[in-house]
Image (cartoon, rainbow over all chains, first blue to last red; front, side, top):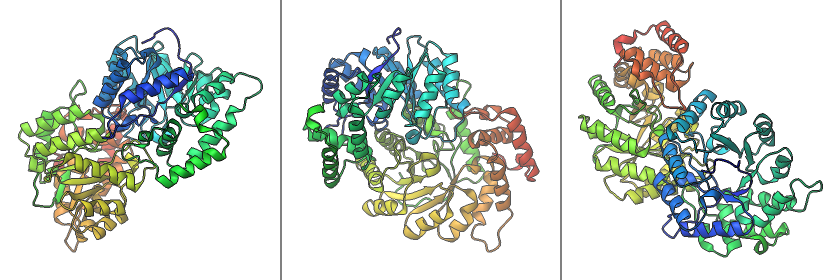
Length: 306
Length: 306
């Protein structure tokens, strides 16, 4: 892993394209990544929540990452999401990402058991770090309590970062709470704090935050690039209201199906529509309604799609 | 799998003993199972929630089941919990349990994504059944929404049972809602409905329910056997208030640590106390307080421990 530069910038939580049999289509994921890079995205985080990572087996995630890198995606542009319900699986995937040269690992806490304590979550991450046992590890903690059911308190993150200062490198805060992101930046100025909720990016960067790891970058990478580049400007550009409109339109539908439906529309590649159960593709009626909502927001989808 | 007799009776959701390195101690699990059988337990369900199943990798769960059977536990007395966050992993473990001759597979829905639809959960189970592709499969659906975050509606279970009448064999209802258990028995009289909450056993059996798959059977198998055997009696025995007292005492502490602490106390084997992070052993002070609460309930722990 790149042990020198803290990560920052515009990172895409990549959607996972499936083939006709429902298997990960790593070749399409690689070409998607290359289009994103050409559109100004700094790096990708495959197998996160948006990428349906938890719907793939450990073997599929290993093979998918290998295929992505074999197709020419630079591992220095890959932050591999390696969290799993079972810690031994997360350890295996994190070791694998490290040996593949990925710039870091984005790791959920074990998420099956609820009402776990900060002490227990700390012990889980500490075991992961100790068992991976490699000073090159750069660990990004993944906070998405509304999905995982297991949140990461600022106190727990601070304790872990103090115990493993060379390893704990950042947090992806996908809680949607800007108060939480602000508290992370304030408590942990050395860490790279990323937001998942795209509209929070300008505020976060003004506080010294690192950037975003987000889903909208799949769909509108250039728009997200302009939002990132203008984040520190005194006068906000027009990107923020457009992005807010896109999110509002998507949120009217089951979100994972909606993201893939819009991706299919933007790319002209219908095979993007497929998801793995229990997630489902948007119905045809919902897909049409989503397109209409996007058009009504005044966005020309073809202009910025990747 | 045993394709003839619907399961019923007293089944134990076995705790998973760990060795000094934190690995599953399959030899101790096997001897625990044999003690349970000798105490009147009909069968075991390893790697469920009480057994910290989601803290073990697919490889560990496969090897653990193999070792359990190799140690002489009859597969006809094993209902293997094979659910996973990722459907391919659940399919692999279910196939493995089937090939090992287990009497059935107890399967959680994929549980990472929340707010999934009945349609999506149905699609996930249907894919599991279709991909396992073996008429001998006997599937027990595992409903524990307060932990998994993904509940199984009676309507979804009914639809699945209608579509796969020879495969869908039962439900373990660990919701703690007797209204839900009652609705399952009423809607699905052909299925074996088990409760997880031990005090509901007598009511359930009076309605025609199958029995219980429960955690307290690890600790007080004979007490649970007497509760089961007297469930249909007009006059209730004294077991129910004792079991309710045990549960009330345990619930004052983090439940998984408390179960293992009491197991250590009852068996005289301190190594039972260990759990995998993010779950933690009870503190020494809490362990003492739990013992006192059990004693205060008038239970002689040594008399009924297994």
